[in-house]
Image (cartoon, rainbow, N blue to C red; front, side, top):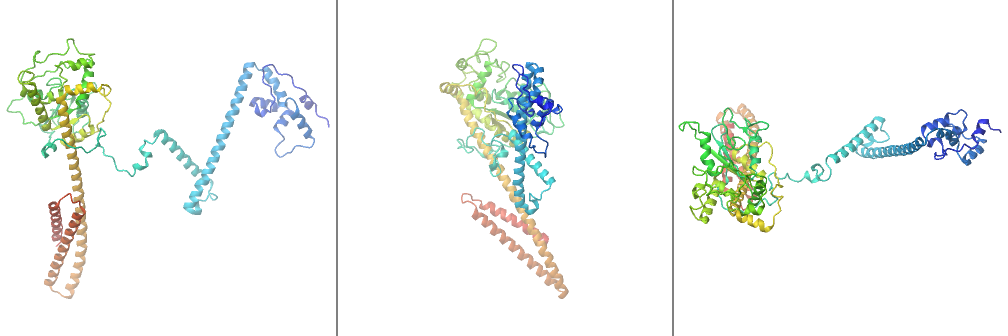
Length: 613
């Protein structure tokens, strides 16, 4: 059988492509879309029919077998012969770009096909798994075979939503630090928000014995009256942060007005144009820069009521507060501050009505400031006010002749200053510690009955903590601040004892409220029980009266029933109280309190019964 002329021309050897051009030796399916269309668009082209194969449903004929074998054994395919003129017309750079594009298209199509088939297989498997689970739970109603198309789509949507939520959760909350991923967070008790900030044990062994009045600090501060809070700000103790809390972070009926760009805020009393806070951020340095105890006690009354007549001055309560810090950290922080150019030249140091002379308080530097001074030079100055600064600012300097060191011996002077600082600190309305921010917030709120909006933040990394010093230098700093070290130990012991005392008091108050609530509920239950019994007895009495009209007998019966109920109630209460005593530990001896509570409860119940009568 003879072939057509077009087929004979197709089997002729193709022209040799240009040097450097890629040879078209594959089917048009593996080339770009343009080449495939060109190869298949030629009318009567055998190349297109051979590469594309016969139409669907039509098998290869008997006579087409040798033709296909010839085409497979040919040195170059029909498609190559067809597309060779096309590549010959393109430039070399265009041909290279088309070759790279063809490779990329093949790789992308392969990835898309793999991804599609993978997702289909995953959805199919999840569908079967979830269908099996539903069939186990809900029975034959949720079998996979009976699922319609809508249920399949809904199930697939739920699965995809779950996978999306898992991915978002991993991005938002990676690792095991997220509280949502901790399984034991649901079973473990709620941590104490006032736990020890320095990671030490909550229980400590007290060194000093304080009375109940020393530990219970709860003042009757009347913000609408004439009371005044005075903040004694010691340098480098975190007083700036605490001062901002006082004017910006307290829940008040009339909050302080703080304007942008201004350090001072207006803190007026409700309904008055008078301040309730004397601090740096409310009244400024009215008594001098970082005024101490000696200056404030003599200056604040005259500043607040200076313009009024002495006969018209109100009787105010001045509540002094302050913040203390570890002496070594505070000393290093002040040294770094002085290195940056701080001098505090505006401090007045007024004592006994006059500032100190240059002979009584010499300067440690000669220039405008002491910036850039090394730590050794800072420690070597004998007149440096950074030494034992906290004791000096909290004590009454008039007891030792102010800044005149010749009034008494140095040892006696140090002893008087330390005892004065301890006494003033103990009788202050409140003092906090920089190392215990949350406990400081708690004690302030309990002392003044004023709550903060946001909790305090504990900063363990400061400028002082970044200074690396040797053990020898640390011991020398402790020696230069030996009075501050003793005062801080005393203050820390008193502070922690006050905190534990107030926490125990809160726990006892909460326990008392729970007991009162239980007693009230129990009384209500007994009252309803008595009322139900009384209604039943009244019905019986009406029936008895209809049968035997004798009023004296019914009254006697009512009195007897009431007495019996009262006796049974008292017996039950005494038995329950005795059982509570047996369950309690032998360390406690609450005999009188329990008897009192039992008797009060019994009287309440008896009173309710009498009222019912």
